[in-house]
Image 1 (cartoon, rainbow, N blue to C red):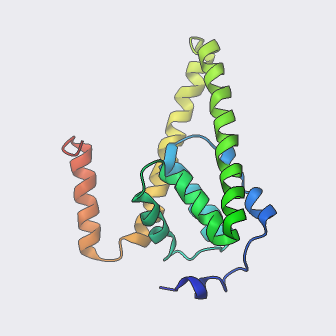
Image 2 (cartoon, rainbow, N blue to C red; image 1 turned 90 degrees about the vertical axis):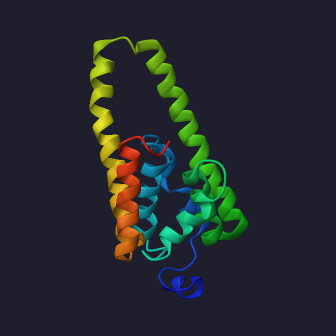
Length: 167
């Protein structure tokens, strides 16, 4: 595994404008797991800001904090890439756009939720959200589950959760 100093050689520090242009705040479906999958795609695969080995460690670090992991991860990644200003830019680029989108969609749902057209649209969105979350689990699992015992532990937890034993 690369340490943070070695990782920076992948791509130079991000400009603040580059941090602010990340489009993740405009995708407000699927919750934290879907956001984390999108961040992994954006920052590990597309932009090469972080290695595949380090990203799950960063996710694990922010998961220890109370609150939504995806928001904390976005802000933490901004801080790593751009310092204090990167932290601020990442927070502003991530939180307000999603909040405005959710408020707007909530208004649309409250106004038109009883219509059959919107019901069909929402019925179609649900499988897409499930796929996003499944992709997140698969992508992070391939990197994080490095040993057979870890993979067995993850499978056990998934099965116990599926059958309602972990609530």
